[in-house]
Length: 411
Ligand code: NI
View 1 (cartoon, rainbow, N blue to C red):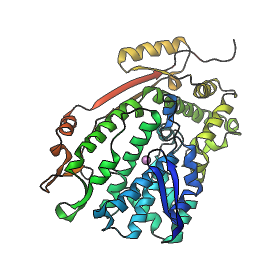
View 2: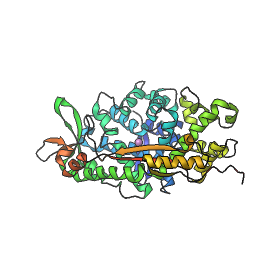
View 3: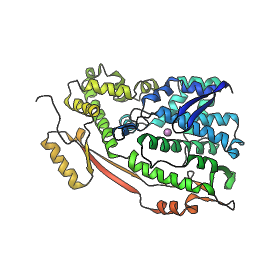
View 4: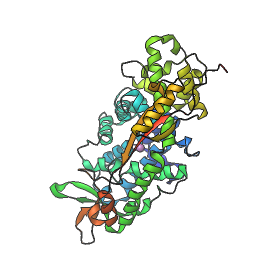
């Protein structure tokens, strides 16, 4: 496997430096599908709430790669059981796991009716620059990378490194999102966790990443960080309001597309997401956040009043308000919409989110090695985690709706 003449480094506020040793990794970073991630916010609409949450999927993907790189090199019990090919495959999986994300990801998954994971696999397996780069090394490499991302690689330890409960993806995004939102909740001691991770064999000789008992406080902190970040950042209703308007705008555009294809003569990059058949990876590549917002600027000058209003709301942050979803509230809002002459199809949306701090399930549990060498599930070793695992699942239902009517330009 070809190495660089010199290790390349990039500065990063979370990890200090990102280290690139292999030419293959460097070439993947320079592939156009990976460069596109610079134009996708890591936190979707959260910059509408936290003014500095401007970081991209590009920097997150590099961060995940860096954590995987450190795991496979610095955890001795892991480093010694993996081949060089396996190490590189899992580093690539970390690097490329988010390559299929669309603009304002969460909103976009509602719009395009199929998810970023499907695109990620297609980009790696089909005719893309990334696929070409991987195939120069080994014809099986694209498939092996996708297996890890899809959690189906026969060597389960590789899947655990990238996505499980205590994995490189989550560890990077919690620290990164916490840093760039300037909220302290997501912070935890990554160094301590990395120092205390080991590979052990469970029943049936299954290889499993476990945390030594001396790392348990770091893991408790990590679990709490996740919980707090969900409610403070990921589920923030103002960010969801921005996403809601995107979803409603696409609903309107799909209706316009049925009747007036000429409307889209200067919005061609949107069309693959409005028609029935699935977009190709080339069409997916073309639509990033810069392109989408440019389309909003064009739509805000066009004829359709509803699309025009929704697009202007996005550009000028005239967001929908929100209220708890109860039958009484809904009745009240429907009446208000009627009085303002607004169609509920485009101006009312209900959404419900729920999460709890830690849900252990088969194949995705955190294990702890006790001082006497016994390996137990995290909730058996930690009273804090045991208590929150038994706690109620927090759920929140919200209605989004506009405060004021459409500005039709007639005043
Ligand atoms: Ni990710």
